[in-house]
Image 1: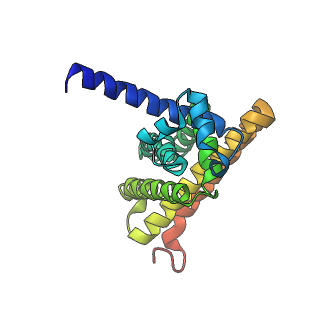
Image 2: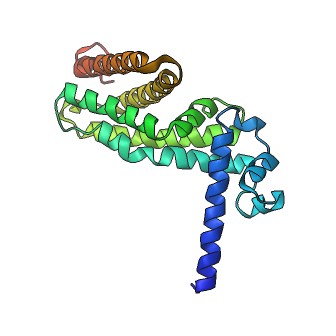
Length: 215
């Protein structure tokens, strides 16, 4: 790649990221379905026609935001369900990692929480697709744990879905606590999340003992 081509590509990537950042900021107070293309380009300082050099539509931009917001979660998900440490240590680590992610990426967490059941179909589907990848990753991690001996694939995926849903709910509640409830509410949410994860763990340990458990 020539120097000139490299500079142009870098500028293009910078503008694309600026559009994503501007859209995410504008979405702090509205849903994607109400976000206008001109609103985003005005915030970046480019002509509306220049938008199409980067995205086909605002919907396409929303899908890119999903990839940005959820793509970074994969390492955290893997660490959260790591088999190292005892049960209480793993639960504390999971809650701490979720809280840390909320602190570092509040706008991303808010965007996913709002758009997961929002009015833009392509974005809902993109979120569902990413969450399915998370569920598969968690299922693979759980399968390697000694506690999962004798579990069928369907039950492992069901358990993985419980963990993923719990992580998303905890992130949303921690975000609300940070905005409205203060430190006391944040501690309450973190404590509740730990208890809920503990309940899932207890159920997991005795699942095969139940009638119908394990298939």
